[in-house]
Image (cartoon, rainbow, N blue to C red; front, side, top):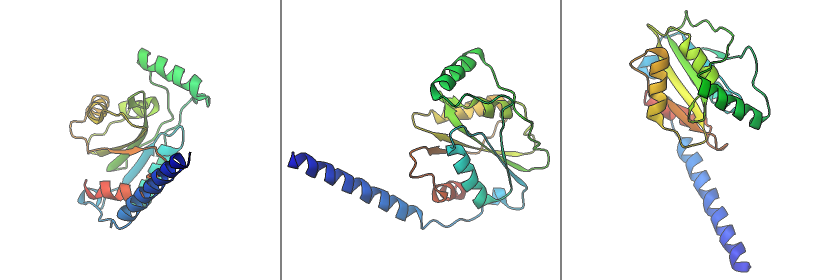
Length: 193
């Protein structure tokens, strides 16, 4: 029993050291505004059901600036995760896209679009937004929150199919582990745009 407790203590200590090292490593990253964002009118659009994507959108917006708007559904999804999951699976099978409230993107040069990943795909509200907007003469920069197991190439292909855009900026994928939804990760990604 003592050996088991000692083993668990060692594992927890090592995990704590890993987290401290990672946070310390990320906290020294400096932000250098990418050329692509210079002198541009920026809009941050996101859909968030559980709050993770909203957190990333707010952190991203605090770094790049511009306006921020949430994609809002005409009819909200149920709060019960089991009912919602069943409904979303059925909607995906049917190819259904929910009605959303309009967001005007006409006055912007750059549009960041954020979405959670649902069933290995872009959330349906974000799909509605992407499909119904004209991104001609705009730079589309997507970002996603997910819990893992994402085929990034499939997601990029989905965006291209929804928007008819050929060149998509490399998306940011933030994993919803609750620890690393940080500005430092966002800055690291932005520095590589």
